[in-house]
Length: 110
Image 1 (cartoon, rainbow, N blue to C red):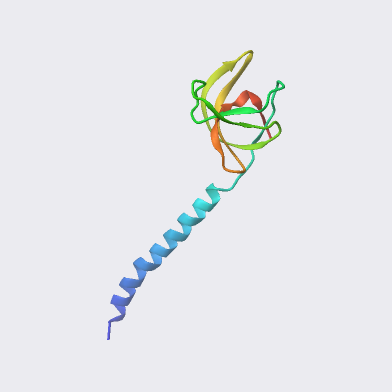
Image 2: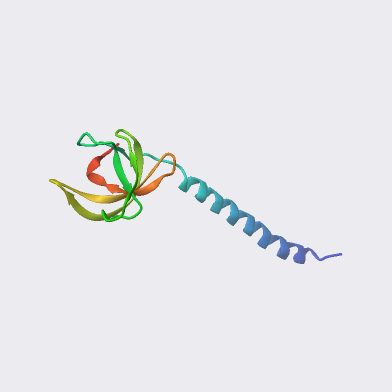
């Protein structure tokens, strides 16, 4: 018969591993939750807010987001000026998990 101490020494790492996996899974699920922080508020009559893959106007626009769309602010890039408006590059995501960079001057905090 296997001594109890050996069984305990085998079970402890297994239980710890299961706890770590559960906590890591919860963090992944929570990080995927969409929590709107801003909405698109276009100041001119355009066809949408330009979204780029990088925080640089030299990168092409890959999509546009409609006026009034709720987005989640993920991170902040450099300060820039478009016309008379100063703002930052914002990394954002939509509720459909489209990620990109846009000008913060066209967003309104919720």
